[in-house]
Length: 587
Image 1: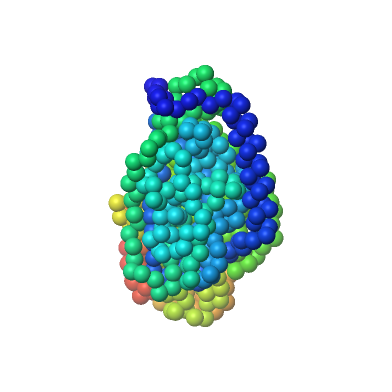
Image 2: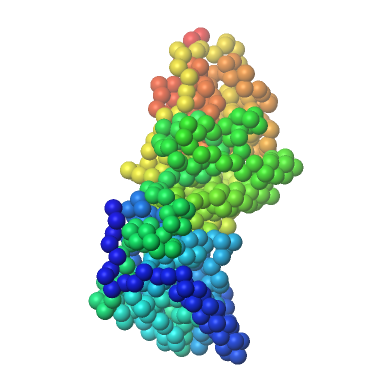
């Protein structure tokens, strides 16, 4: 549908465009010379005022033009706001110092993450690199006024953009570098620029500031003249020299879903395939089938575009082989590798990706870097959130202070907070892990674990009972509890993994040895009293084989006739369950 141009708006010409370009370059040079005599300092990011009360706040909607024709430039605008907020959020300005919008932001380049968005020029909404930042500058100006900052420089639009949220007295436009926005205050203050899925919110905090102020939704003013409705893609003036270029480069679009995936679980793979639509884009570490890496063997459906971060994944694999099986060095490396992979994926995110599906390991890094602002997203939940994981490890360590692995590593507090914020903002979390899903209520989509058809209960061989422990003898897997229980019930403990820790005194008092997965069939039960267990594949196999499983609720197993659940750390309940299993075995 064509949107008519305003009658009072003259069609722009190439000569006018050339004259504007020349004039703007002269003004840019003039501003450089002026600022060289009176330089404005770039302010650093800090956390000193992070917890202070907001003194001024303003917000407005992001997605105001989302018809298929106008969506491409609107998505570009949101991407530019996303890139700018990554730079500006968290800046703290000392008392008496000048804050300059362009000094702080720098030039809008593609290398910095900016793209073409909607920009008001000569009465038209045209494609421009960095277009759409006036929404941010206007909200910053409104928040600064509410916070009592001194406005040193502010320029209003010559025309009001379609759907513009700012009344005349709050409006503030910017144009590199001579149309600037500058503030100063007699007190130190902090700037926060945040994108939710639907809104842009700017908050200014100050130490000992005023009581909290709710974000102000701006109402449109009544300017003398308004800009043309729509943008270059919909204005209908096909004779304009800008119009053909815009149409060739930007077809109609509705947006798509981007799937940012790391470790492949069969449950996640099936769910992602089922919910992918034509035109969606998948990003995975590498082609797991080609490289024979089952951990990355995602199977995107036909019609989905797929890209791989092969080089980054091979680099991680090469370094990972040289790390110890356990310890802080390994965990630090894995977190950094996940950050690098998330950054690699983010480089290829299209601004038109309005919805994301994200593997949990990538989530906090994408959130910290600001790539999730202005988007909705779901999370493939594969482990406890870091805050809960730390709490569980702390509880286990309080009971087993002799362990040298329960307290050897904790993630950075900022990463923990970032993940908590991102999970709170997620639309849905998807997981087959029953214990993980329980913490998210109605937002959780609980998948069925992938299991083979169950066989009848299999009695164990006669003789000394054997208990199968499908993990390395580590504190977080419950080795202290099972060693204590076997000491009480008797039998031999078969241990699968080879990473180990010290301080497991009871383990030296019971018969135990390392075993292979094939010996599971010879055991009375699989026992896994873990504090932390995210992917209990061998326990699922045991249930399918008709072998009883005694496990903690933290393992997240499905309800099953052969499953007995206990609380993590409850060695007495574990021993009682193992005794009941022995009592049920025919003599």
